[in-house]
Image (cartoon, rainbow, N blue to C red):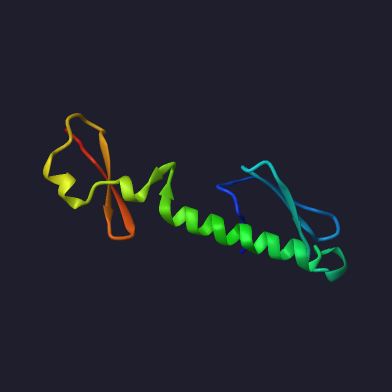
Length: 103
């Protein structure tokens, strides 16, 4: 598994030398190699790890552009949906559940 500091991977390519190139939603192409001579220097690897940590934290706090802290708790389900197919996102601790109505 390769973790990326981006929302999504748009393109992945296996290169002839065995490296893997990934184009991501943040507009960056990253190349991963298991050959030390083709790997980034220590400073760039630390920057990558820092970006990865920051995006991981942001992903835990936000879902699809919605801050988890802005979501209602389970009490929001006491009020039923108003139309067929309506969905509600509900925060339960650090987890989010999505509920849909069929009428």
